Image 1: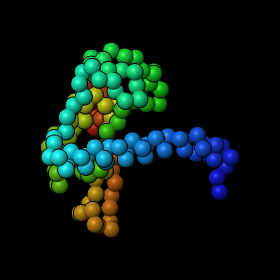
Image 2 (image 1 turned 90 degrees about the vertical axis):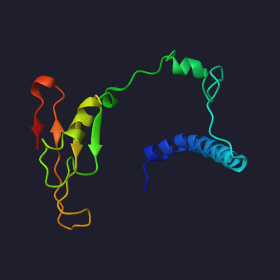
Image 3 (image 1 turned 90 degrees about the horizontal axis):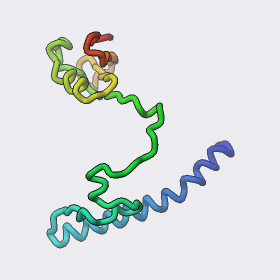
Image 4 (image 1 turned 120 degrees about the vertical axis):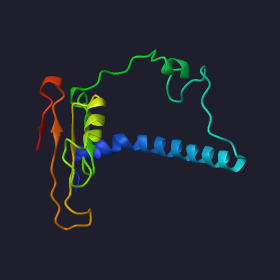
Length: 142
């Protein structure tokens, strides 16, 4: 059972679904035509207007536009890995590659899920690892 507020939200979003379906149908048609004709994917010309905007491709590429302010909830970035942060039986220090990728991404932090044995194992142990972004306090916490 949905509340009146939930029904209102779904009603407000319904128009976007029609537009999304239309856009996806057009995209599938373009892909099918490219495949049928043996054409490679192409790029829009710099002077072309990007559909559903008033921007040209060149303006977008040159970042000559202003967007809405990013809400505070979305200003933090985290990386979540769906597998172990290191190779099996390796220490975190030995698995520096994933740690380095996480730190170099500019994210505020990261976490990986580690499992014992294999993904099919019924005995799974999840751990969350996080790294402080501060270079002076780069500590690994479990």
